[in-house]
Image 1 (spheres, helix red, strand yellow):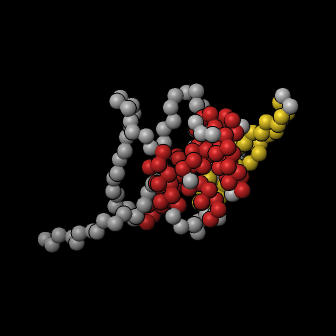
Image 2 (cartoon, one colour):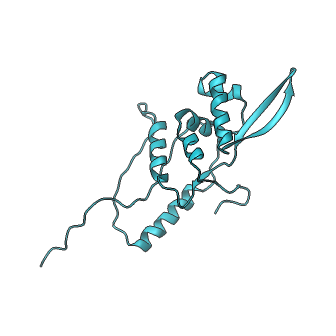
Length: 178
């Protein structure tokens, strides 16, 4: 359950939302906006893309309901607009198919090769669990993954954390005969 000062996650359910998040530039925009609201110029500088390209992708994210206009202010005869995420976190509608694949593909797309000495850890492990044990472990992992984490880009580099508990296609051997 989110902390009382954290808004509820935005539930992704429409094809427009999945399509909007599925584009690599828009996925990167969402990750940049997790830090704080920003102008098109700030986003373009961060992503090292033309402002027009960023504007197009921000418009697509706004139309899908993922990004909102957070603030407008007058500066030097123009209007400066700050864009923000509609919610600090997103979740998938319970009837949506492909949520896990979407997240795994997103993690693969944003994964950078580690530099020498840089921290990295990947582990694939298989557990044999009852349904009850699997539900309990999933609840513990979800609670840990949803715990508020500081978003401070001045504190080092971004690291991704992907936690997934999934039914694995591993056949079981029959018990050995005595």
